[in-house]
Image (cartoon, rainbow, N blue to C red; front, side, top):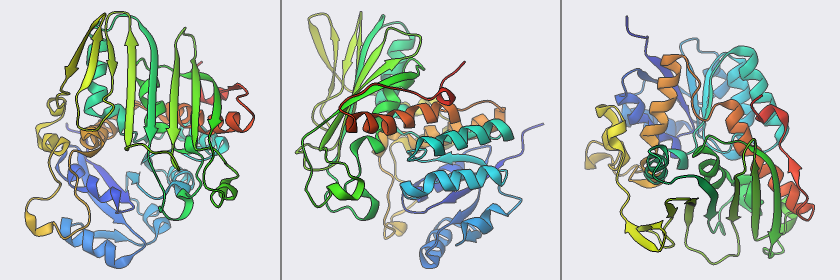
Length: 371
């Protein structure tokens, strides 16, 4: 007998609305409810996608016994408290990055998952992007040989962004570069050390008491001779937007393109080769394969809405949804699960702490590590 479809509720309908049609078309999922504080926006989205169950109050949604799982796409400061509330209400959780902004919030989520038996997955896009899946395929086939070192960066100019973004320490939003370097080998960060460099606008510094334009962190892997380096910038650094990771193997190495839309490079000794990254829609159920490259709308009639899912985030959105729903249906842990999500997130939180202490090494908390 087939498993009962998972009733999904999406919280936050800016970026979050892009996932609605993926859940609607994925076998095993039922796009049950949406939640948005702005009632006009809520109804606009609900009408566009034919969703009847609508909430403006998140706490009221959590009281609905028909909701099996929530997918949280709200601003960063809300992630932890909304995840904690959902787990306490008996709901499975998928949450956009980062998991939390403090180590203690990460600990609470991990402990709740352990106590309740519920599922938590941080929806980190890069580790389901076509670029990552390309490197993962080479690695798992043994083509790269022994992995010797990993490097990743996420550089983005956030000047003019409102609210909590202003002055945000670079490493507080580091999962897009921490995630891939840990995920490739399913490794765990054991220790971090980080240096801050440069200085942001003086008016931004007091918001978080964080002066650095760039933070660069070294990660020591648990039970491994591997190390990784990650670089993060948010303000006052001239650079085209870039989420990237490089992997250096004994047989083959991969370097992300320096300029967007140009080919990445594979090195085999002295013979570099430019490569076009293929799409990985074939790994998905046919019903959602189109969402790795196509828009979410069936016709041009809906284009007046302010969001379109192109091939952004490396085509990762349907892969994320598929992993979360499959994990629930198969009663297994997703990747990354709560502990792994905490390990990825705490790297950034503790890296900033290290930078503020002049690069002092900091051990990762035990609750983020496997036994």
